[in-house]
Length: 361
Image 1 (cartoon, one colour):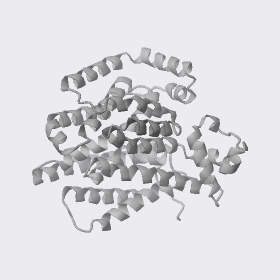
Image 2: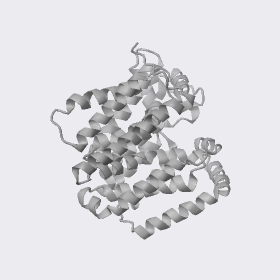
Image 3: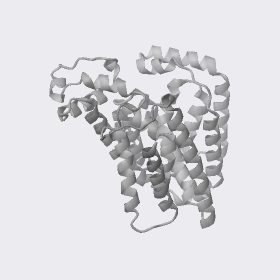
Image 4: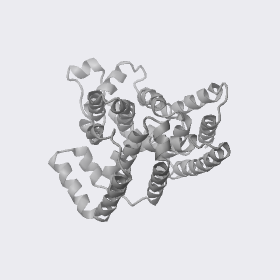
């Protein structure tokens, strides 16, 4: 448990430097970022899909042999996306260990080097955003979702091109993301409306429709299965087989954040050029969670929108004008994150994250 405690304490200290400016914060920031990366990159058989990717990587050949047709699919890898397989073959070409550890390190390096630097484009309060990420997605994204984590990182980077109205760049990057995880197909049409300003009335109508669809759960489940089979999307059909219970905490988070950002909307729009884009993305996320919360297939879709929580929460804390109130809200956020963070560690996979194990000793 000690590595997890040190990590979240460093995250809290770094986030506090977004609340009040301090000199030489690199002294705190650098150890935190290194530890955050190292715990994901050097973990030893921790994570929900670790064994699956270990078996997959055992059948991978170098990139030269791959293009010569020497790759033999094994352990469900035939359905793995082409971009991920090619990246894995490139990694194998430089891997002198012939084991899973270098693969895990390389995937983490790719994900972190794209995802974390991208945050600086969207918020001046990067470490408040990362603090929320530690609770909301760190263990799920960086310990389990190897393929989708890369797709999420690519999507996060591509949002800047929506703001710049360079949709072709966004589309190219989204196609690249799809080559790592097919669920990224949901992102393709977003660039055509994310720059619009949705009225409060429109947002409320969207939420009402989502609630209605939530009540239509079983018919929607059957429709989802049918669509997946029509298009022969095997992975999506696989996820559609599972139903999930509704998480009331997700609903509470959605409505709390939505109320706050709409109440202070004019102020955030003035201060943050990306605010409306992330508000629109959050509305998309809210629609997916509320309308389709019972179905595992849509859980994969909503992972792309964790970035919206991170950015909007960073605005909500960082832009509080009264210093005392800013610290008070940061304190509440810290308590909330701590409770969620340690709860996740305790319950994830029935406690498989405990104790933390890594290959360094």
